[in-house]
Length: 433
Image (tube, rainbow, N blue to C red; front, side, top):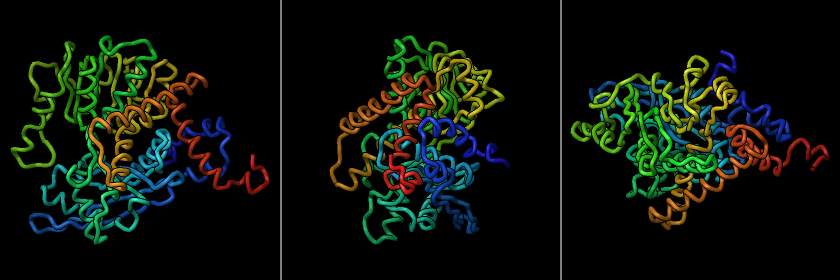
């Protein structure tokens, strides 16, 4: 497999021109070409039937130039080291784009968590923390939820870390339940932040929500809260999907009863994850996920997994703009094609950053012991997203580049500046600028 065939290689293929435009030192390029720390762990779990299964997991800390690393933990059957590494790279860029005092990290376990009982899931969650506890901490690396992990899982992980440390360390993990030091507003933060970016962009284009149709690929936590809040703002949500298929209604969909129905069986079955599908909805048109991606809408929201739009299906995309709530949902080749066609892409490293912003707020609250109301958290989130998104949009207009290029320039520029202030080749060879 060549570098370009990997998720990380594809992500980094976008960087050379940006480095050149920034006149970044060779030190920066070399240090960001690979992660500073990557570990693979084996996690033995005693199953409910008495058998033993060993799961593979990873934790990657990509760069800590601007502060301790930050990034989620995902439980997924397709996760591997390359995925985790690429995700940690994007986290480094994202934290810098939003001006947060963090570097980037990510974790993952190769598992289908929906096949585990609640007790098996708890054992796996605690086992993962036992395997990585010596490389995480409030001043080193702060995990959070990601795909198929949630406040319950974060609570188990925090408790396991506390038992190992023999003290309360709430700031070691964010995305926790409120009773264990979580923050108000964290659950909806990613969706709310994405909507804020979309609202700002629409306003700059002279568009109003009432005039815009939206299709959402994915119906996890971030997608649901985005769709719910977007509908409240006046956008017409015409399509939603999950892993089993999509539903369409040109008159508009109300995400709240759909979400309630999808998750209704979870409590009845005592499961952490729901097993029902959007395809069980009645009085709507059913379609495949691929067909949803080809809908003629104003905004296509990509909130599922990475690499959803590639060279094979990019020419089917008819939306005027794309909003990336998932990480890396558009490959670099597809991104170039969309730019050629004049399709606006609101990039992941900006659009889905609401979650890490409120995770930062949770970390601050845990360290100070001063906890904020939901209104205060929301106000701080909106202010942060407004400031950094506006800076990114202005940069794109000034440099006449895509929003993705502008976001990467914003993030990489701040990382490069921090590296330069510690000393680079130019400094030590007498060219201090």
